[in-house]
Image (cartoon, rainbow, N blue to C red; front, side):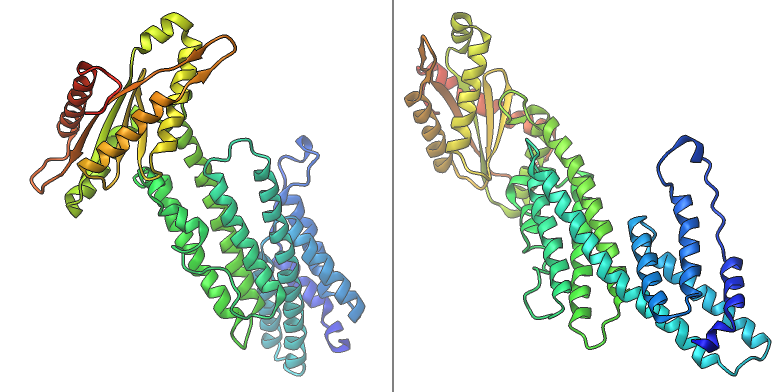
Length: 426
């Protein structure tokens, strides 16, 4: 230590020569500590560490520098690159002067600083990263309507499990799921109930980010289980994981907005504006696989009479009531649309004609058996349903005309159900 103290003035000069000048243009407009101001303070702490004269000072000043760096979002890469640049310039100056006598001691001095800073930075960074993700979970827990954010919650818990694995420092095989298709978030991404979003750019970005995140996590686990752990490598990987995680959160927020605009505000079913996109997707799948699917169209019987008798507010209750019947009696893989007014269309995945008729009859019977009980009145209503099965051959053109043709066919079946007495399936 005493040997290095002889070079303190030269070390200080090297730090000053590398000093990045960042002047705040906003200091008079803000009471908050700005990043440019944080960098200036960081420089003082960095120099103070390098000029420490005792082991106690080194320990205390290392903690102060690292804590300040993390609290003010100054990256480890910035800290590391500055240390390396100062070392390189200082050793270069010694070489120019042919001052080789204490080169090993000086190199060891800087290497020890690097090790102390890196180990402490990793420890502190892990604690802060865990706290940030726990705060994200707490914020999401009080959301009234989470929509897709409920799946982002599972992703955050996966991140916390990864952090805990590193912190325990035992490195067995109890690490989080590394396969991006098998974790809870990945299962949701590939579930049938979200397939109508696959064509959106935001969904595709999330999928790419998620795969990259798992790739980084696999490297974290591999590095932890190696015999030569480098804290700087883990810091780099975890900072990138945190970045990808935040980007996934941003894209999930966009998907929430898409989901909101895709849902009918009264019934919370899908709207007609998404029908063509999902229908094209279903036709493409049917064309490639040769598997048929089905479409049913529902129309509430004498709905105008309900509105005229009880008013539109009660009519809205009936629409909501029927929407619940559809959701209870159909499958999660089916797509239910409020097509307009009291008319609903359902796309039944991988369903043949007999299965479609059976599901439609189930809805029809459930509707006829149900009732809406209000203070002074009990309302009973029925529904008429038309069904068709759709088989797409390789020559079928998938375009708007084809879609309109299928809608006309199922509408004809619905008209037939109405003509034959209503409260029935055709």
